Amino acid sequence: MRNTIDLKTAPRLVHYFRDVDLRGNSRPGYVPEGFPLHCRPDDDQWSAGFLLRVAVRFQHLWATYGVRDGKKTIQGPQPAVCFSAFNLGDLIAVRDGFLPLDEAATQFALTLSIEVAEKGSIQRFAPASHEGADECDGAGCDVSSQSTNPPEWRWQYLGDYARTIDRLESQGVEEASIPGLELTQEQWSGLGVVVPDLATARVLQYDLLLLIDRGVVSATHFDHILVCDKLPATIAGLHDYEVQSAFSEACFDFKSCMPVSTSEAGAAEKDFEIRVVNLDRITPKKPVKESGGCWLWFQDNTHPYVRALITAGLVRPNKRGRYLASLDELDPGRDLRERQDITLRLAQELKETYGVRSTYFSVLHSQCADDDPAYSGRVWGGGYYITPTPEDDED
Image 1 (cartoon, rainbow, N blue to C red):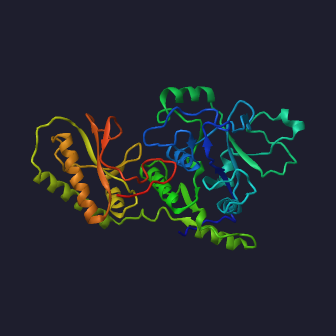
Image 2: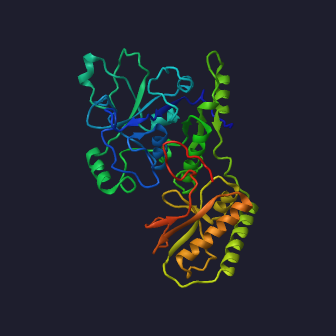
């Protein structure tokens, strides 16, 4: 659970995610008609945890007009992404059912250092008093105020918002550009993630490793996952070094599974290839009725055997986030359903030997793992699907 983070020398900003009732009058001005199939929100509710994972997997913080009770809290023509000062006390208060200083605080958030934020054009924003409200022209407004509310920072979206939304409606979330802050840009390096518990930390671990394994971000782009359940009962009266220690103790080391030696990778590669060769050799061929690509889909991207195969180059994540092992030793001239059956037998062997779960994944009439129509065997949850809460991982 330990990680080295210096809060004292690197004060942070935080973007909180909230539960969204799509039937209420505080929903965003634009609501996508649907998400890709690996996103599984509730019909009328988007939980804060779901929205955090969507932001990470789709690599953007969406810019909005901050609609609350049917009114925009961000005036002017351009939407924005809002941030607050990061405060451990607020996380502890929310966790324990008390009122935080920042009413926006939740246990689902992304954080970044103030130094990084300022270099990335995230500006401090002070709400105008009623006398000067007409002078504020949007998210970039920076005026003095006697308000006692916690200070706020905003990143203003400068693109053509209406045109971008039109493209989203016609092309879908996966294909069109998202109007918002692109999290994977190198300038935002050092991002932190806030979650309530270890179960949520582990599904976010899947998401962060996926971005790293796909080469979308470096291994240092996301710095830590802070677990609110691991924070102390209070930080009142603690010295700075004690607050620092409490923070570090509450961080989940999501990168601990990544280091793999050359010998471990080589042994896993040899083991995997021998198993595929043997299954291909002992299985009689049947007439070909269907063609297409077939892979072994691993559902845990932290398992030592899977990490070794990733290092060896045999396992790669596809665009949507499935970790797929190439079956190069399996005769591609076999019928597609026959290869699926062989892959299931391979999955059973690996489960019995290493305790790792997997199944087949196939694409009809295509060798591209990102194409459709795609099919798979039984799935036991894991991190691939983006759901409102972490799924139970049961047989």
